[in-house]
Length: 548
Image (cartoon, rainbow, N blue to C red; front, side, top):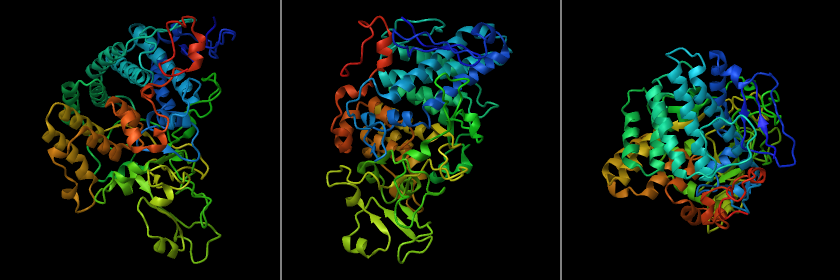
């Protein structure tokens, strides 16, 4: 039995993504250096820690990560350009799915790198002041990667040992074991990490506390979740909500004080490893943030319109459900700050009666009377043009477009890479974690107070009072609705619905296109078939229930 062993760059990384029994052993180590020589020098160990961070770029700001973490929920369904409909609409989802296969491979590579660093840090020769900080970072990252694994696939393979040779078996480990380790690692991270780091993007004490609060909430440990959320809110870290929700998405404001933890993409796109055959035996790298491509409707074939930088390059992958669009009241500024409805003529060839800069296309969540639609010189797509009466999608090419991640600073209109950082944890989420924990503890008035802080910021001028809620308004479904309004598109939704036991219920209720095929077993994803084919203990390491 042969497996795929990846020796990348100057550290050894062994993957659980095994090759088939007939494949030859593949080793990749262009530098000739090994773990034994790298882990024992401070310079080498710093390289290892930096590499451990880099694996976040396989998920955050990437199409595979969006399909696993955001689509297939109550708020997003497939646009015409969708690639992974088996994830978004549960169309015969199986272990052959490429997005799941890629993320499994990279997440386990990341865990293995963290395991090696944690277990060898004593011999790395790090200065006494730096050693606990680097251990805290690696422990945070191991917990972070293991959370993605256990929530996506359930009780699959678990180890805290570095894998340095050929492995032919995998274990099935209870979910509780994963979380015991996650909590242990995060507590160490909280204890070891400083409030600030000299390099932007490194994990801090506040980030570890915020993520630990999310983990406590995930496991129903509501008192602990509240305490940890309050530690962040009252921790004197300098975090603060942006005064205007729209400011969060300004490319000139990537280092907002609202952001607690981020995946930092370099303005020099070459540093984000779009192509990296030296350090990646698969012949490609992680690349920069691609989110700006994925949510855009097809606008550049409409009369008066050509593709340009301000309007983006439309991959047309995901579109909002009608339910998501209806969640925003007229008093809520987050709708206009999150969605784009108007496209202005920019072509040299213009329809009759339309000048450059005039409205060329208008797509709205509202109904427009036919007489008014017919009177317009520009093209209109209203609610009934986009959705059927039952909420099923009628037109998956034209729809209100999520604009949060657009990047008009790209070098060219066809540039697929963006230097936009991915906001993994924002202060707004911590308020919502505290609110949900308070609700579960029976403190609805306190839950409403935390939610109202978010809703006050979200209010249009003069509408703050109208945006306030009372204790009687607070339910779990209301909090999920509020999380959708605040966090739509931020790679959390699938986890939110699974955590609350609401995935199947809310997809069936609010996302009719996704509801057609969803079943109870879809709360876990299928284990990649490449993994199942590779192990010799097939009787013990089986596919997740419900998948072939």
